[in-house]
Length: 93
View (cartoon, rainbow, N blue to C red):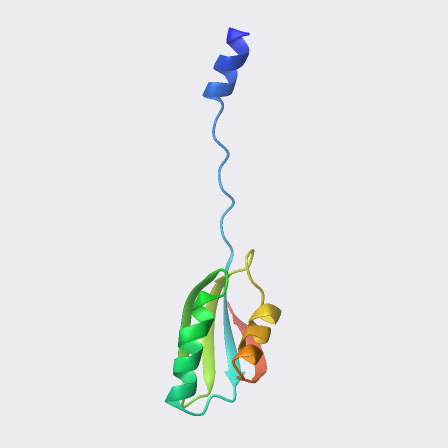
C-alpha cells in the first residue's frame, strides 16, 4: 500500500497543452470612433479573447483569441449582437 501511495506522489504532473492563439482580421462596417469604442467595450469580454484592436480608417478589427475557448463564427455572432456587420474574416499567420 505504501508503494502505491509513493508512486502516485512522485508521478510527474501532467503538462498543460499549449494554447492555440489565433489572430483574425475582420473587415467590417466600422465607420466612427463611437462604433470602435462599442467594440472595445464588448468584445474583450467574450471567452478566450486576448487582444482586440480597431482601425476605423481601414474598417478592420483585429482579434486574438484562444481557439479552445472561442471561434470565428462565435465572434461574428458577438459582433452581430452589438450591430457591427462583418464582411470578411482573414486569419493572420
